Structures are given as C-alpha cells and as structure tokens.
Amino acid sequence: MSKIGKQPIAIPENVTVTVTDGGVVVRGPKGELTIPILNGVTVSLEGKTLTTSIRSRVKQFKSNWGTERALIQNAVNGVVKDFEKTLILEGVGYRVMKEGEHLNLSLGFSHPVKLTAPAGISFEVEKNSILKIKGADKGLVGKIAAEIRQMKKPEPYKGKGFHYQGEVVRRKSGKKAATTSAS
Image (cartoon, rainbow, N blue to C red; front, side, top):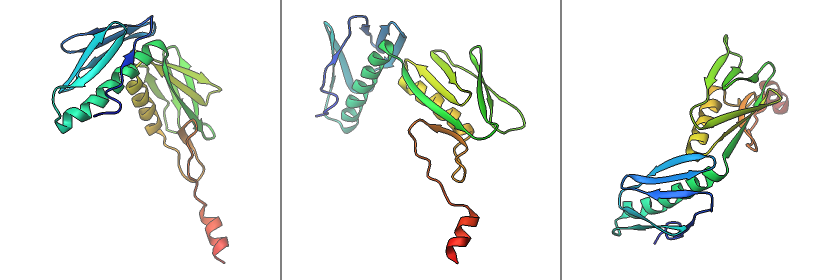
C-alpha cells in the first residue's frame, strides 16, 4: 500500500476538477492544469473528494500511484496559490532587470542574456539581484529556476552567481590561505 496514494484529496470551493480518459483537468483562480493519468492508476471523483487507486499490485503501478496523487495535489494547490522559487544573484557587476515580460541578465558575459517567460510563469525582480519565479505548475517553476541557475552557478571561492534562497554555498579557501596555514 502506498502511504501517499491512499490519502484522499480534498477539493477547495473555488476549484473544479474534471476526470477524463486522458487525464485530470484542474481549474482554479490562478489557471488551468492538466495532469495525465499514469499507467495502472485509476482516479475517481466523489463530490469534493478525489481518490486514486491501482488496478493490480505490479511494482510500477504502486510507484505510479503515489506519484499520481502527489501530482494532482500539487495541481490543486497551484491553481489556488502560486508556487514560488527565489534566486539570489551575487557578484560585482551582475544584475537582473525586468523589461516587460522579458528578463535581461548581466552575468559577466560579453553580451546580456535575454530570457522570455513561458506561458504560466511570471518573474519579479527586487533590488536588481533577487529574482522570484512564480507559477501554478510546480514542475515548470522548478525547471525554469534550475535553467536560470545553470547559466551562472555559484562558484566556490567568492560565491558569485545564482543560488536559491536558503541554499548554503560551500566556500573553499584560496591558494594564499592554504599556503600560510601549511607553514
């Protein structure tokens, strides 16, 4: 038995859920998300409660059961309140600017990097160094945040680059500190 999969999902008042052959459609104030139904999992809607179950006890079906329930729960939460990831840019001369729906990133390259927000994602910039990525789809928010962080990862000596809020960047001592301590 899946501990996560067997838990029912409570549907809030301002959210509508439709179960079709291909997937589960979740509509709410923040948008609409479609979750495909994974192999071996059945989804049933009874009033304002959604439950998931499996057809047989095949190992892959049991794995899909908990995953399906978590994806649907994240979709229900996302259409009510946006998911958010915060990236912090550190480094002299590095900055983030928002121009309409586009981001203009100065990351120390010979040219500025321009980035367009995909559908369902919004960017907020604070103090030219804090970037907030918001959206209803938890997976898409995390993917966009990871792609932006990949452009300039934090380096271990000075900590320059993008890092998530609350992330601890392990710092290394430089060459000078290593030679003086060896003496």
